Amino acid sequence: MKGWLIVNNFVSSEKSRTMWSMFIASAEKCGIELELKRTGELCLPIGEDFGALPDFALFWDKDCLLYTSPSPRDRQKS
Image (cartoon, rainbow, N blue to C red; front, side):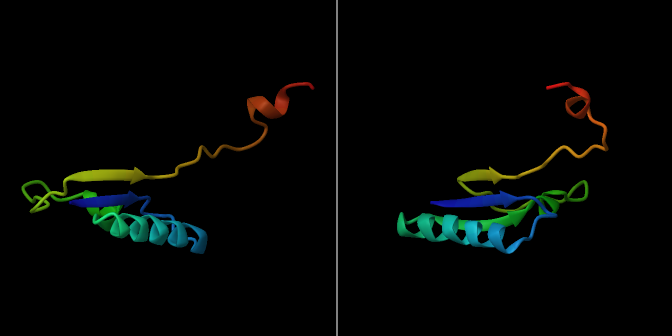
């Protein structure tokens, strides 16, 4: 069985890379070939395709909402 571990294109911290390696190693122990793909790799020009697709995809994409203060939460009184 083959799968893709799809991660955020802009995240590359040591902690994240360690976690992804752990996912891949765990999958390998179960006989699953897990290939790391970044979200940017999923954006193809019109007319191109991925070729052979995996049996499954695991999306491990962490995004966070960024906004400037004062946020609504900052304005609340305790």
